[in-house]
Length: 113
Ligand code: 5GP
Ligand code: ZN
Image (cartoon, rainbow, N blue to C red; front, side, top):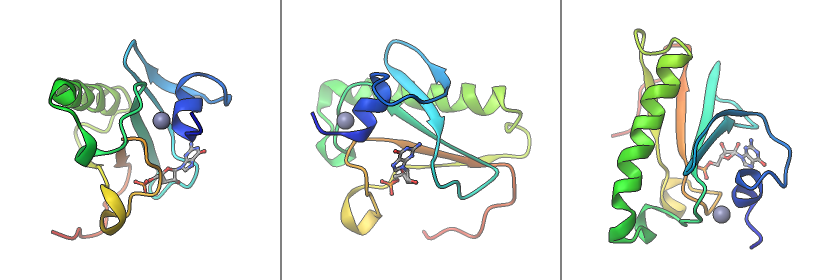
């Protein structure tokens, strides 16, 4: 499959993993928007939240747990951080493989609601 994040997850594109387990990998965003900007992705190719199958819902819970773990390991837990999942064109999703942004290390700008 011609998916950049599948290739990263499969090790076909050399990447430094900040975290990995059977189901997820985490790595630095190529265009960081904050001192810490990590992408957490399922190894399984899921296009987006909109395409999420009911069977994959528990995976999202585990993705949150991975985010919590990585943030803790990087010392972000006390000052805080932001988790973002963009979905579809209006949401600004560019890479069509589900991913969560973990941003921190500075006071982030006010967010859209
Ligand atoms: P989206 O807008 O789809 O939520 O975010 C996609 C993110 O993936 C962007 O922040 C972009 O900088 C990052 N990105 C795109 N291609 C690559 C890549 O090949 N390697 C890494 N590490 N990040 C990428
Ligand atoms: Zn993929």
